[in-house]
Picture (cartoon, rainbow, N blue to C red):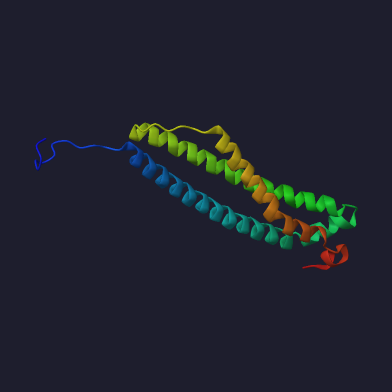
Length: 154
């Protein structure tokens, strides 16, 4: 080029493009993690409420079981298993919807979708943990009922 002539070429620096893409990817990952944490918290609170209602509705049953010899640990385990079962059923529905949506996107949009099996196991394990964590308080409340008062409950 002659001095003062207009440039007829362009120089591209891909390292800047890669840095910007990595920053965007990290930001989106943080937003996704925050959204997932909020969803787990809300779901856990829902599970706790369902289990508290279940304990209230089944107070006489719990009192009867305690009166005929069930231990507090038996009652605690019963309600923890119920909470975890609810969470696992919900997570299986969520995984089915996610996999089905991915397959639909792959079929209709001709977009490659990759199924990540370890992430599915992490999601199901997280749901089980939420069931244990948020189901513990209602289960503990049920296990500590006084059998006499529970049998009188209407």
